[in-house]
Length: 212
Image (tube, rainbow, N blue to C red):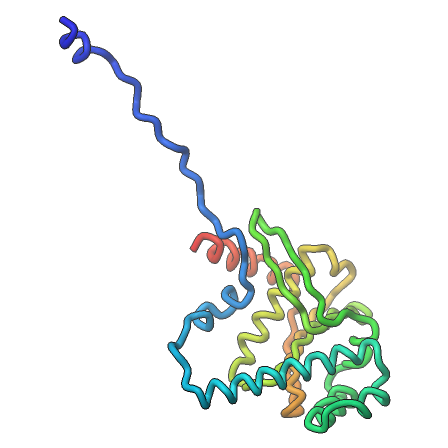
């Protein structure tokens, strides 16, 4: 009888944990704009690795020098800069393609930020940005190859979008993205004409990225 009772007994359904949509907790801007660049190409040879480290150190020194323009007059800075960086510094100060010194004076250099987007954290550090009139200028200094200009512009777009979400762009009507190659004395500029379009595109990109 006991066995028969067990057979005929109605059992409740097995407990299941609620399904939760897993999302990334951290948003890597580098991985977001150039996912292929984060994969390792394998072990590097000693000679190329040494040259790469030297270029990286030169890039770090150049960034520090350009950052110093915010706090030190150009005339004083040119006297104490390393010889190999004097010509790039002169280019930064004298280029007519964008108002770099004015952006540095009125804007923000090496500006770090953290943005909470749908419970994911985006962090980044912008080389230089500033609002002149109704125009936002986003500037990225590059000391490496110009082959990666497209990725640099995508990164600047992501940073501009972050500023928009953080309410820093009230009154801005136009966004100018500038990738500056001081060593080569080259400036590349692109314009983002619609904040609404940028916001829509970035939201879709981030939603797809966060669920990967």
